[in-house]
Amino acid sequence: ERVRRIVRYLKQNDVILPSGGKLTPRRFLQLGLALGSRTGMETLHYLLEGAWNPDQSLCYSFLRSVESSQSFDTNPIYYLLHEAIYMDGTVGQAESKIKGSTWSAERMLKQAINSGMPEYDYEKSLEDGSTIYFTGEMVYSWMTEDYIQLAPLKGAAELLAGREGWENIYDMD
Image (tube, rainbow, N blue to C red; front, top):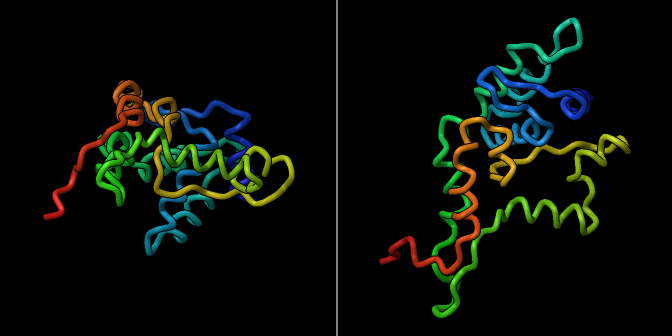
């Protein structure tokens, strides 16, 4: 219920983080990245537990903690190259080159939602009361809108995502 309440609040309100970025439902749900670490579940639990001010707004310490736990603003190269590092020349066939990543994680998420897995659609989950799921270690095209330090990199990110004909990046010998 805590996750649902925060997602609903973020959907209904423009929330600006201390450094100027936007805390949107989609950015909030990226906190699932923490679940891949040994202490991630506890960290996320304590973060959610202290989210609210008495006036029912999100408290500064929560906003600051969310921002601190998401390193894309301070490590923009991670955002730019996250999918590109998997575009290593050919996959099993010497002749065929990999097409661009074209925001692979974002495409797969949309495909899952459109092919009968609506549990990955937080907006639908808000409406029907179903579980809202966090996302993991993925990057999305919209991140240049929510992360203030990524905004100037939008053009470069789009070029990398759309680049086709990748040569071999890694020397396997």
